Image (cartoon, rainbow, N blue to C red; front, side, top):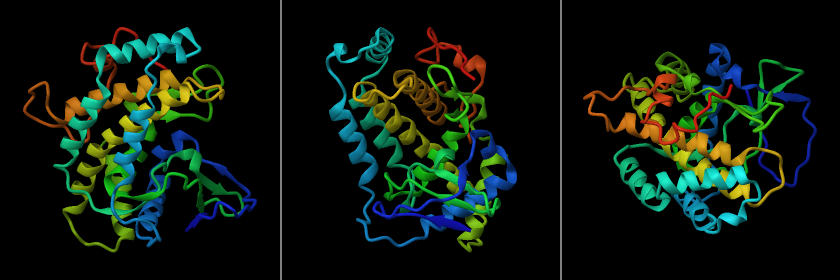
Length: 287
């Protein structure tokens, strides 16, 4: 059962609690979430049906990026921004990413675009049912983005971290093939599809469009670092997301000439500490 709230002007108390990141790994919960996201994707909403949102959003975030390093109040933030300047041209990388994603066939549907534990509430009166909230980013978008974005969230814990940078990350928790197919099979079942090839297709879409998720939230975090007083390590988070972006991009495009693209890609500490990580010199395990 999926209870969804769209109306910004409607305020209603819901006696519920948000999920924690570790619950995404629970097979039963993950299957329920796969079904819920499928239900959302089948909704017909009075919005522009073209998938304009994701690339327009990234364009806007690119335009808003600071050019003056002194916009950052923290010295640590200025240092991370200099790291970004030394390893990446965001505009060029955006074009490269769009070219790569143009080769991936992913249907357009109504999407939540921020389907993460903090926006999934368990009803206290019905603990097996969930309420999906915060449709701030909803749009018509590529199916692969919504699923890939959700898979990225397996790595992040925003709820239990009590010290700076106020999030925890474990790259090795990016869902493996069994976990992804568990979610996707439930998603497909809710679509009433009997296409035996659909699971592998969706898994490919999700893992490629996860790149767009990492890229978008990287830019979002950099801009937040200079525009809010909320206590959160936005620049550390930006670096974390871009680390995942770069490593996943390189694994998916076989930049290391291994002659085999692993699906889904997997992270380990050896990879994260190697020179393949553009931020390996400042990488510190945070979990």
